[in-house]
Each structure stands twice: as C-alpha cells, then as structure tokens.
Amino acid sequence: MTVDTQVEAEVRRLYYAEHWKVGTIASQLSVHGDVVRRVLGLLERGGASRQEKPRLVEPYADFIGETLARYPKLRATRLYDMLRGRGYEGSVRTVREYVAGVRPRPTREAFLRVEPLVGEQSQVDWAYVGKVKVPGGERALWLFVQVQAWSRGMWGEFVFDMGAHSLVRSLVRAAGYFGGTSRQWLFDNPKAVVLERYGDAVRFHPLLLEVAGHYRVQPRVCAVRKANQKGKVERAIRYLRERFLAGRSVHSVEQGNRELWAFLQEVAHARAHPTQPGRTVAECLAEEKQRLLPLPPTPASTDRVEPVSVDATAFVRLDTNSYSVPPRYASTSLTLVADDTRVRLLDGAQEVARHARCWGRRQLVEAPEHREALLALKRHAREPKGQDRLRSAVPGVEALFTRWVEAGRNVGSLTARTLRLLDTYGPALLADAVHEVLQRGTHDPGALAAVCEQRRLALRQPLPLEVHLGGHVPDRDVLPHSLESYDDCTTRRRD
Image (tube, rainbow, N blue to C red; front, side, top):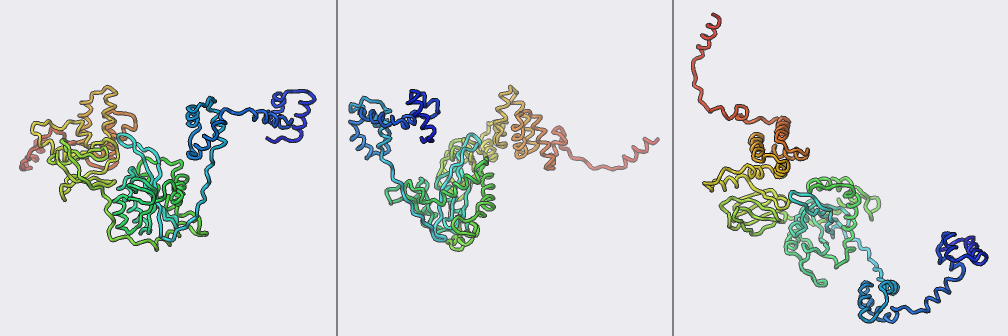
C-alpha cells in the first residue's frame, strides 16, 4: 500500500519523537501495520529474521515439486495427506501457503481466428433453460440452436428430449427453415452424436449418419474440451440468453417456440453482422441461402420406430407414460412409431391406435373407444366407474377429486353430478371449466355447472333436446286427427 509523503513524515515523528508503538500508529492513522514498518525500515529486518527460521514443509520441497509437475491440479489437502504419511508434522495451512507459491501456472492457449466459406458450415448445440412443470412432475427444457457460420443466421426450438431422434428432427426442421443445408454440421461430443471416440477416430450415431447421408452433409465434431472450435453457436447461445431468455418465463414448448421464432425474425436477424460492415444478418443469410445444398425431394424420416410389448391391460409404455390400444392386442407385440407430437401403434402396416404425444410423467392416455371395447368383452363387468370415465374424458380432473377428499365431501355424489355435466356439455367444454374452477381455488359442482353454462352461452352451443324435455318424457307417436273438434270447443265457450 502506498501512502503520501505527509503520512510517512507523521509515522516517523510518532515513532521516534513520541515513541508510539507500531500498532498504535497504524490504528490512529488508519493504515496497515506493514505500511508503518515499511516506512520505518522495520519490515525488511523482520522479514529477514522470519526467513531465517526454516519451515517444516521445506524438507519435502522436492517431493512437492515432482508431484505437482506430474499432477498440476492436485489439491493441497491431498498433498498434506501424502506428506503426513512421510513424517510431516506441520499444519495444512503451511502446506497450502507453500503450494500456492510453487504450483505450476497453466500456459495460456493462443486461438486461431477462422472464418468459414459461404455455405460451408453450420454449428449445432443445446442450451439448458430450466425445469418446466408438466402433468405428473417436471421436465428439463432445452433450447436447440443451429447457426450458419458465415452469415450468423440462426434457427432454434425448445425441446424436452436431447436424444438422437430429437436431434435429427431439429436438423430436418432447420434445413426446411433455411431452405437448404450447409456442407458440414459441426457438433460437440454428446451421446446423441458420438457413440464412441478414441483420439481423432469417431463412431457417429447411425441415425445421424442416415440423415446426414440423406441431405449429403458431412458430420464433424470438435476436439474434446475445445468448445472454442464452435464459437459461432456458443456466441449465439450467449446472445439468446442475454436478449431473449433473460427476464422471460417459458411455460411450455409451444409458447416458447412461438415467441422464439418471432424474436429471430424481428430482432436476431435484424442486428448488424459482426464482421460484415454495413450489413445485417438477414442480408448475409439471404446471400448464403443461395450457396446452400438443395433439399432432397422428400425429407428424411425421423420417427422413432421400435417393437413394443402390450401389457395385459391393453396399454403400451413410452417414456414413463402409458397409451391404450384395442383390447384384442393385449399381451401381444406391436410396432411403435412416435415423434414429438403423436404416437402411433401398428400391427404390420395397419394402424391400430393413434394418440397425441404426452410429455407429462406417469400419465395414462386412454382412448374412450378402447375402454368401451374392453367393457364390451366383459359380460359381467359393471358399467364404467364414474371416476374412471371422468379421468378418461377430462384431463386434470384428478386434482378435483383430491380437493373433494380434502374437503370431506361425498365423492360419489359429486362424481355423479359431474358426470351429468359431462353428458350435457361434452368433454372439451367440461375440461376447460374444470381448469378454470381449480384456478379459482374452489371445487363445488355448482360453480362448475355455472362455468360450463357461461362457456356454452359464449360459444352459442345448443343443449341436447333431452336436457330441455327431461328424461321423464316418453317417446310416443302422435296420431293425426281432425282439427274440427277445436272449432266445436270454441263455440261452446262462447255459449
């Protein structure tokens, strides 16, 4: 610490004239004690006297130096344990202080700036966004990003899956967005890309090789722990974190993708190009699109296709969720064909079931016709249980059942009233009403019926005829008769 000349003069006066101690001077002048000693010339003498006393760690200096030369990142505490086994009796603090002074410093690497040719390379990576609530729990949300290395034009989408099928789906969609493909795809080393690597020898995932061959693209990977080799996409992810993700809440894949694609078009591609003065990214991307490889006549197939076993209850399992099939296929095998939006079950070439892909956890996805077919096979089966019917027709109704139980209500009676609402208003309208009632924090069927009626009136949907007439009105044939009797009745009243 450096002090001005006036303070140094005052230190000398107080020490030699007033005979103050070093600590008193440091306290009164608000300076460090070593500053006072340096001004008085005492620091060197004190330091020299302390250096004359050897430290307990010095006999082990050669051993520490050799060990750190072989293992530069070895922690001082591990060296302390090794020294104790060799007779060291000092403290771990002494070892830490000594190691801090002799540990080899890593050499800084110099990077080569490389600018790819137009349409030559695109770089691919993912960014972790956070956890998103889904039915039954949470899922990790990822942002797939692909950047054209020359123009810096980018495309991305939010995904729940980082597997090989998700990767090739995103690559195919990116190719459709850009209207072509670059000659190289540059990746990091995730398992969806690299199955095995030894030095420069890389064994790519066969699904990636199939799609790359379809689009005539060369897949490449960076060296291990060399993220700087795909710096364009790394910088793009940083840009998206700072300009798009910061202060934004992503509640679903659909909402996130809708806002992301608008941001890319209106903001990201409208920014100035970092190396092309006076040009925007959109202008450079338009030029690069002319140099991209043309798309093949048909897009590559990216569906997940695999055999799957049907359990005894006529359900198949995919990613912790269960999907129903017709009961005649129970305890057999079918072919699963799935992407990120739908799930199909095939018996040979015949499609036997189709469902929307569920990204929840431990959810039961059941088609009403499959349950009806199963009940028809069971001659002694009762009519479908009310709660099971509501679970099948109204997603999210389980939370309503839970609130009934917590409130001590008669679950059977409330279930029957809710079933009448299902028959009256239909599953779609009832599902929206259940969601609104749960958000309000209530569970009363009266409130549920009121919300259903409000939504029906807003949509101008007519009620079924039996609701107006009631179930007590029998179905009768009306026999035609002469209307002259009405005239006789009118004449008698006048008389």
